[in-house]
Amino acid sequence: MAKCVRCGKPATIYLEGLRFCEDCFKIHVEREFEEAIEGHAIESRLINANDRIMVAVSGGKDSMVLWYLLHKFNFNIVPVHLNLHYGVFSEKSVEVVKKFSEKISKKVLIYSVIEDFGINMEDVFRKAKNRPRCAVCGVIKRYLINKIALDLKVDSVATGHNLDDGAATTLKAILNWDFNTLSRNYPLTPPYKDKLVKRIKPLYRLADAELKAYADLLGIDYTTEICPYKIGRVTLSKTKDILNEINTQFKGVKRTFYYGYLRNNTLFKKDEVEL
Image (tube, rainbow, N blue to C red):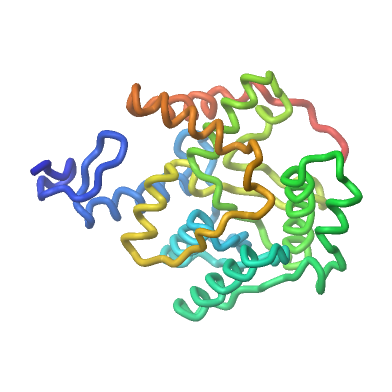
């Protein structure tokens, strides 16, 4: 039987050529999280001691693990969920978020796009019928999350974007020479005057498979429902599949690729523009 790379005990978790026992795998994930907070690979700390952080919780595994880790490490957090009213997908998401809130005795603020902001996404999609729905939804979500953060007067907004998200977005942007995306695909986006709240991605050092294994191991509930507007569409997941195939042949290249981008991010910096 293969042995854990940390302690030599029998390994039960195999990821990207690494082998861990359950205890050492938990240590591995949590250390990667701590190093992300400290700003490894970007030379800029994500969270300071007195920061008040709004956690954007969708109900998926990444944001649920992010919520769990920020809670575990005793950061001052305000969990927020935005209910988009996408049928079963949204219903399951709200259910998961509420249950976890009760489990850890930490209140979550749930906002409804319809009741709190007067937005019916179906109406918006009909008006913007020539634009991809994912793009339209993304713009609205980012705007509302920022609006909520401004109202709550938090220091930053934390999202569950992980290593796979960062690497896939970078690859797709390079293939299209999309300098706009390359200039901002970073784990830390500083605040902009009094209009945009600072954004952070504390999971940028952890891969999709690591987060799933961690959530399953610790029994962190998350929804597996797929957004109805993603089904059958070409999304970032296609680029992730390509990267994973390359990573199968060249172990660790996904991580090396993304960290290389982070170290050389200044190459793509753009001049400040007015919103």
